[in-house]
Length: 82
Image 1 (tube, one colour):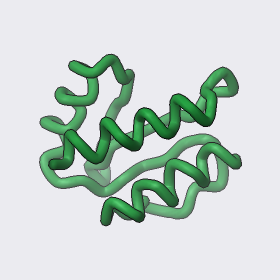
Image 2 (image 1 turned 45 degrees about the vertical axis):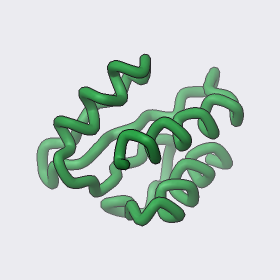
Image 3 (image 1 turned 30 degrees about the horizontal axis):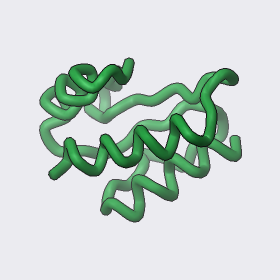
Image 4 (image 1 turned 90 degrees about the vertical axis):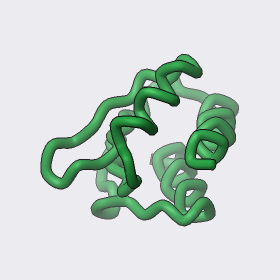
C-alpha cells in the first residue's frame, strides 16, 4: 500500500485525482482522453488498462514493483499528460 499511496500522491501533484481512494493495490485515475494516455504509456513499455464505468486509467501495483519503477512511471505519466 505504500507504493499505491506513492502513485496516488504523485498523480495528485500532476493534477490527477483517483476515482476513489484505493483500499488495495489497484488505482483508478481520472484522466482525459484515457485511451490516448494508455496508448502513449504502452509505447513507453507500461502495461496499464482502463476501467469501464467510469472510464479511467487503471493501475495494479504488484508486489514486484519497486519505488524506482513508481517514480519512473510518474515521470513518464507527467510527460504523456504533457
